[in-house]
Image (cartoon, rainbow, N blue to C red; front, top):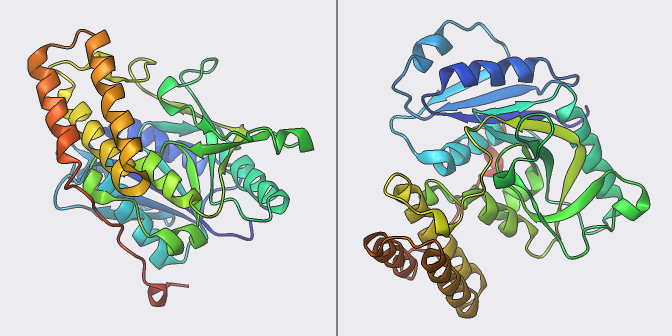
Length: 303
């Protein structure tokens, strides 16, 4: 590939899965030039294991504290940018790409770029749960003109958002909008970044022949009907982050619609009142929560 790709992987306390990810990355038909690994202050044996590796592709940064997926990807993309990457291939530590996933992702993105004069700010893979079922939490949101490339014979469709489970971003996009909003910590950081990337440019693209498997316990797309004592910490981030994005990056009406939708879903799911009150509080906290993206410094290019 003429464009240099950095695979950016964020890990936290999932050493056995991380080993599989690294194995899959090395098995790519067109491997990345760098594997930028962010160890989010893992407390298992991850740090010790990484010290044993003699891997010329691997560039490891260990964070002093767990900064969540958002902070990890921001740090990883910044490091990849400094190394001189042209394309940033983002994935969690439980994303297992098929051997030709990167090859199809890069070539599919290039073909989409030729067909879309305004540019294509990002591309993503088709994410599976197992080998024959789509991962519901990672289904990219289609654009209203989703079939524009499909009718031209490309194995791709246009999308507005995607997850950080095999997403490819261009250097130009990173220079234009900065890094992911690290203050989000977890949840909606990936969707927000995709929406920011498309502003003023146009949609991204999902490459259907680029396939990865997301190794999750179950195949459920979480929504606010499912708030419980065990997961409310995560839903709290989701409520605040998505509400903040709607309010500060879209409009007051968009925020109010999201607010109402969350309340309706919690009612339908019969979420206990004490948990509903906590989520409502996070929706209100979004009014004053408006982080800005850290910008990259072009002079820091490590080419």
